[in-house]
Length: 348
Ligand SMILES: Cc1cc2nc3c(=O)[nH]c(=O)nc-3n(C[C@H](O)[C@H](O)[C@H](O)COP(=O)(O)O)c2cc1C
Image 1 (cartoon, rainbow, N blue to C red):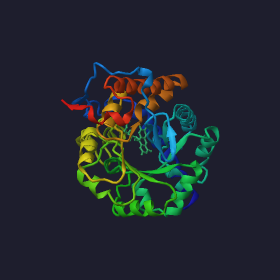
Image 2: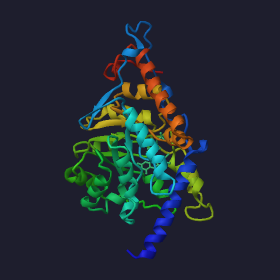
Image 3: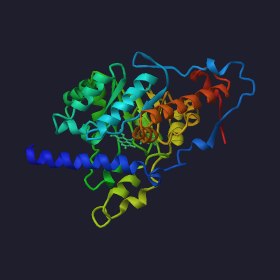
Image 4: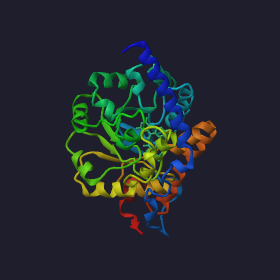
């Protein structure tokens, strides 16, 4: 690739990443209330027969014992402000026992220096459990050896492949090429040295897709359903309406399968992978409901970047609040641990 093309791709990438962060913070770009978490409630226990301090929210994954079931799902990277934000998030995740997904590592495909951001974060936070990230439409054209190099720049415990057909279709410079996606995921699962996780970015998974994903070697599917950050809205906000796709995003601002519906679909499918729930998780109560419905892990994005931008202290408070709410939800459901939650859910 020529240096000129590299530099214009770099510039475009950097601007897009900055736009995504600032636009994701606008309330109207969230599908607030659409997650479906309000349609279920946990059964209250008036006699919990335990002390709140006995509640244990620890979980095990990738051979490690973690203090919580929470994951900061992949967000940002590759622009001048991102190393600071990511380091802040990584430090908090390391301290509090959360997994941390990094933002798309796509830039490392055309800029050899882009991996340095992650190398430095790994140096600063040697024990944080990091998850790599690449888009499915990029993966389809990539050699597994290149994905392996993304994993090693982070010393990642797993690789997340994000699938985002709506976003790619509505982004003027998007890459809506997903032909051969399932095969590419299967090949990655077979050949990569670490587990593979497939995640949406805010539109969820149907029953059919969840069925198709069984038997291909995935470690987990992260729902990332409708009800939180919405890329139809963000790309619509970003786009010049006079240019392609001429304001088409407006018609898709409510597109997607809610996180709750995707979770309920997953219960009906004979799946052989973990189910992670993200997309509109805004409280530990939402997290408890998702865990009660069978989720193994809980992902949060927007509230974390919003807090991280305000500083270390606000980030710690936000993460601490989510953990405390989850503990209280378990306590008031009479469950000492996450495993106990499964029978406690009531459909409204
Ligand atoms: C600023 C921002 C950037 C994001 N970039 C990525 C990304 O690079 N890769 C990815 O898999 N998901 C990305 N996401 C999607 C989130 O990981 C998550 O799936 C989605 O925002 C839904 O979660 P939320 O409602 O808690 O925000 C991004 C989200 C935000 C807010």
